[in-house]
Image 1 (cartoon, helix red, strand yellow):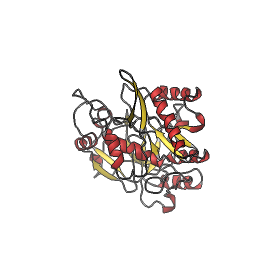
Image 2 (tube, helix red, strand yellow):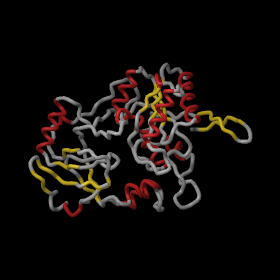
Image 3 (tube, one colour):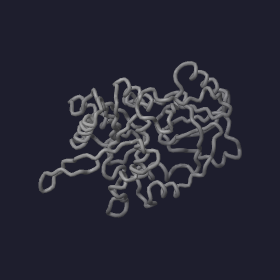
Image 4 (cartoon, one colour):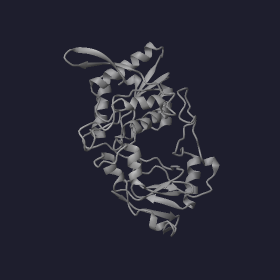
Length: 343
């Protein structure tokens, strides 16, 4: 899908300044059909820039403060809306948050060095990487960066918006449930018996460690996934049924959609997965073998070492507060046995 970018004044349509005009792409790959307007003018009131601190006694978010990009309803939002009406604006007819990362006060334009980006993220430039083909290869040659403030929350209108909770909303829910520990589990396919065993056993272990009310954050990935992964709509139906049937306890489980796309970038990507859950309030993270991994697109082998993800999490800067627990996993070989594995 295409999105056409233009800068608009309150009563007229005009182009981006001539020096930048030949550099900006006329098309970007963007998706859901909802008009969104972002202010990009300088001189915004400092009072309108908010950094919302966590309101509950959970693990501190990364950096100590939780930043809420969406202006709260009320006078602050209306003031921002009035200010935005006076500023130059970028209007996107279609938007996908997997692509629009930041639009700024004093925007900066960067050349999109695709080869370097791919090599640094995936450790290879081999053809056939799913996310690269989906989102990077055919993308524009320029990137826009800077500070972002969102006036209206984006709705997908797909029946699943009730599950798209911000980190602040998740923290409020954990606080409402009096959670003294939060353990997060990410998945991009339906829950199977092994998943259920891991999640229920994690809660048991946390109770054994002395926690009174550990809460599970079941956080399925809601952005792009490759064609052989189960679509989000069907996964959410299955997750609802798992709670309805009592496989997981609804009283101790919070289900929310994690809006990130799946990059299949292994140890690099798993750091993003883990740190974002810290911001949502989790202090325990369940990580499996070969997290965010995939088969090599050309050679007959896995793209990443199966143990590198957990090793990276144990030493990555900014993740010192996150606890990774070893789990006993029941597996079938020639006979039943328990293995101590990090899952």
